[in-house]
Amino acid sequence: MKRLLEEIINECSHYTKLGRVASYIPELQKANPDNFGICVIDKSGEYLAGDYDKPFTVQSIIKPLILLLALMDNGIERVKLLCGVEATGKPFDAFNYSDLALTSEHINPMINAGAIALCTLIRGETHTEKFERLLSLARTLSGNPSLSVNQEVYLSEKETGYKNRALAYMLKAYKMIDCDVDELLDVYFKACSVEVSCRDLARIAFVLANHGRLPDADRLLIPAEYARTVNAVMAICGMYDGSGEFALNVGIPAKSGVGGGIMASVPSRMGIGAFSPALDPKGNSLAGVKALELLSSKIGLSIF
Ligand code: GLU
Image (cartoon, rainbow, N blue to C red; front, side):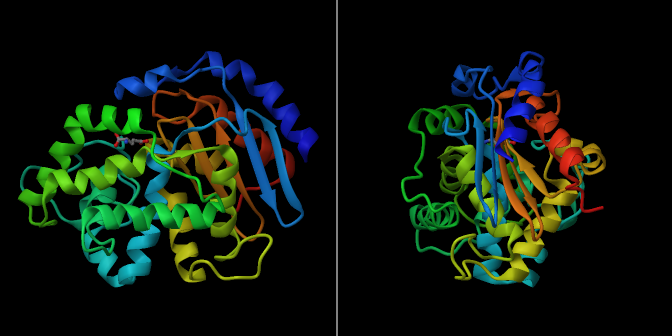
């Protein structure tokens, strides 16, 4: 497997030159577009290649964990009252609704409006406590107690997150949320700014793939039912408005982020973390997607 991953990194590395690093959050523009790494974890071990340990901010890949915690704190019925699960076919930050209504049917947990709404369902007396509980879940699932917020990216997002502010106020205007928007967005901006590596993503993905359990322990970390729910939602809408193509060409539940990461879960089989910050026009890591396409075709990963 390690040799295969190294071959894939070699074969796909030219794609790092064809994408563009995200620039709408100024701090993300500093990423090195040449970085390219991958990590696969299955029951036989952990396989690493390229820049597998380079840190980058998780960005939208925190959305599956926001969904997971909202489910664990409230159950599926409450979550679905607030947020639907249908693919929107629109970009992650789109205002995907008419001005006549905004309801749960217009949003899903993998787009910004849905994830921001779901942050209100995370239990906690204060917004700080909500974020701390989310961070603690990310640390537990990744087995990495030192995961923390990249302060520069967090402040950069907070300063320039006009669209997210607009989305949150739309949610409030349509009475889908009822809290202080700035405090709520602080949870979301911090959550997006948590720094991870491919290895962290692969470990989280493995737990999702392995019905809630770690590879090296038989302890149940999250309910199997919710691992399945998160995988299903990622499969439907985890790769922005490129989710359909990704389902055809790779065929596994995955979530990408504009930091260049992709977390992919192969149910009952493996967790994968890939990273390359140069993005395609839809916001997915270009080399990361190509690497997953190649890996999937070489070892038959598609669940379809
Ligand atoms: N923090 C980013 C935003 O909300 C996340 C976007 C993404 O990775 O898709 O704009």
